[in-house]
Length: 215
Image 1 (tube, rainbow, N blue to C red):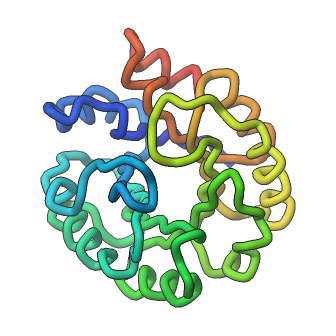
Image 2: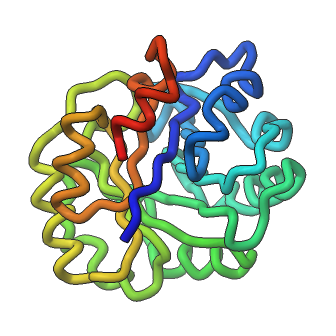
Image 3: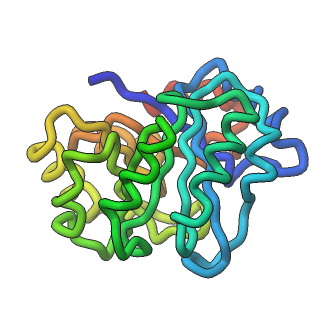
């Protein structure tokens, strides 16, 4: 299973976001869009009105770190479509911790014809999503507590990745948080095949070289 790189625009310069995207677009596989509401996580980033103006030919990986995500899924699907991303080129990720009816929300995402993914925080056992593993297109293992970029990798995430890969050999497993050249190798060795990196890429003097070091 080939390794895909997803730069997180959380660490990009929001004042010239599309320029930042263009600087990495030729070297990566998809674009990770962190959406935070200041309630589920202690930070606020962007919403659907910004997503609609993203300029990229890359698939979008929209990570909803928000309360009641089911209320805004359609807005983000429409915003991504306005930006030229739809169907299987779009993935919507929700957090298990915020979804009282997780299976229903996964079905809702799929009803728009896009990919559905579920994420779990470092303190959430893998067992909490076992019942939806056959229904999702991807699982995102958080290797930091969500809310801020530039945090240190939590090594316990590696055990979750390894166990999940044993359970689901063909599933896309994404990891997000503290990913750099060293931790990327550990994640891939454990079974992850999609790596999200923000500050490691966007704060690098040579972004192309930083991206290549993750593969």
